[in-house]
Image 1 (cartoon, rainbow, N blue to C red):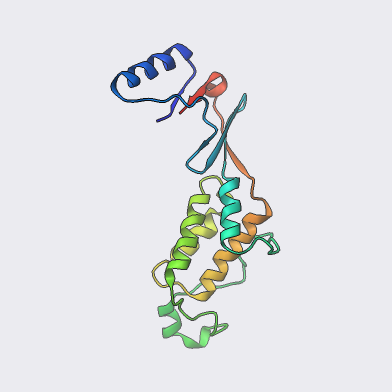
Image 2: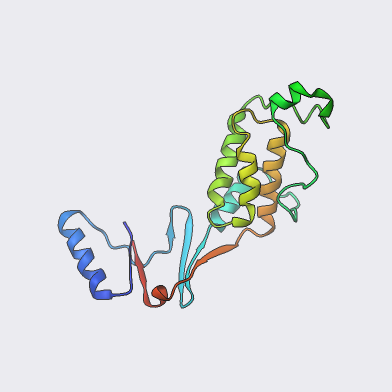
Length: 174
């Protein structure tokens, strides 16, 4: 449980009340929680997932890959397996448009990218597009997901700031 507030007396009273009903351990100021690095400053609260992003890059086997400057190729047309069956002449590369043997690999990759969207709004649109193909992904969809990971590699330490005058004297305690 985390307690956020600007009144130290009220925070202490809340902790005492919760401790009277539950076993409580005060871990001090929040630094890292559920994959988010948290930092407070006079401007607000910063959230970053750089560790998560680095793990995603390493687990995808792209640690040595060259980063890309845009998340998706703007020229690529994403299609479904059903569309390719109905219109076989529109396939650019039949090898890329084959369905994946194990869609779980794609589903896990897109799921991890969806989690990363919480602090990386620059990839939200691209990940949203790829999430539409979760049921029957193709090789081209997996290549696009890996391209987004390469884009994340370009700048893995972007962060989001939650800025509000209320936070100027706040504490976050877990």
